[in-house]
Image 1: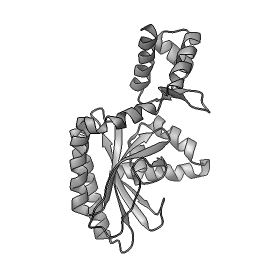
Image 2 (image 1 turned 45 degrees about the vertical axis):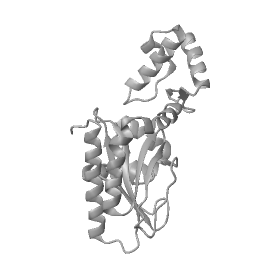
Image 3 (image 1 turned 180 degrees about the vertical axis):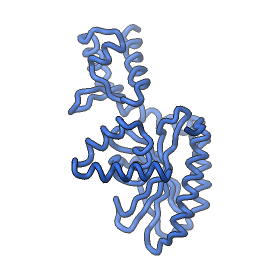
Image 4 (image 1 turned 30 degrees about the vertical axis):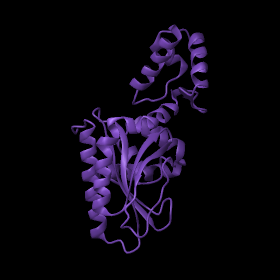
Length: 246
């Protein structure tokens, strides 16, 4: 029982440090009031079960991806799907394009839901479970723009060469100012996407809703229509998750 209590304490500490998702063994020892030697043994055991993971460069510890795996298994059993999926279906029916729901996992995002429109002759197709590096795509830019600065900086510094970071930060600033992200031919030539972040009741990034579409014959009016509708959907979903605005 003592080991379980200690392990859960580590998890709670990592979860509560949402703005700094990675902590050193010394910081964890101090937070959990355990000797470093005891913490080392505990972390080793937790790593074996995927409960936590260690960053290869910083040697800091964060939550393991197994929590997301378990969360996805509970996906259909929780009220989460009943709150969000109707909004995604509503958006798909209105814009007649493929709609996606993504969530961040470290340096990548995971596509956890996709709803295709049968009326769209050409579809942008990303499989469920697809992983996308966090610096690529409208959904990821939208999430990065709304994450705490230190969390975003860690991701940007890890994924982008130094010479490209300043321009990328400008894109994130513009994304947050406009309230939506946009992507042109980043992953697949001739495709675009627009996206907005989903925020929970703490104002934390929970994920992103995006629309994928082809850029052939795309007009400014059509783009404005897609942006307007994805932003309205994002606002409704965030409100259902308890977000009440800044």
